[in-house]
Length: 197
Ligand code: ATP
Image (cartoon, rainbow, N blue to C red):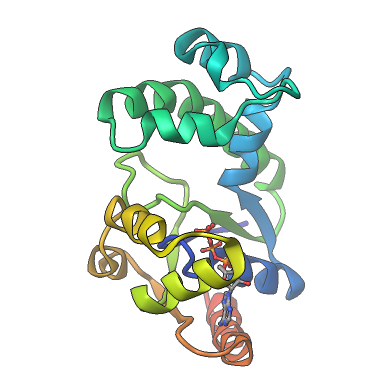
């Protein structure tokens, strides 16, 4: 098993790169998917979150209201730390379990970890792929395809590591400043690099 982290700023194209790598044969372990799993009703983070943040974070359908939680923790370090203290260990355990299942295989495992650079915690990744996209391009895509306002996209970016800090951690940089076809070519280059490891 080869374990490679995949990270990048919000809207940089992490999911687009991950799905292209999966098409080529990689196995994806997705931190956001694990977060959703542990926070789902019946998941191990659900009750601790409701106990800490109150019934106001439960949506009418009984699931956690992610926007309500985001509104509480955004820009509030204490509340964010409380949420992370509940969620992070459970996500780490889920990742460790998945990696344990894959340990004896010769799969190329991609760990999609949006906050890999921001997090001080040790990751299992032996190498790091950074998806690099100019901020203005990422903002335009988030506004066009994902319904963000420009102000919201920029505020979230400001809360993340800088492009420079991320690039400093990169073993390989995927440039996603161009068209989807350009990204295909970048991912082909990345896949060829992975074969050399
Ligand atoms: P998030 O940080 O929200 O998880 P992400 O980094 O996973 O986002 P994607 O969801 O892959 O980013 O891409 C953001 C949006 O930009 C998506 O709607 C995607 O389809 C679009 N997109 C990604 N790459 C390109 C590209 N090269 N050209 C045009 N649109 C793109």
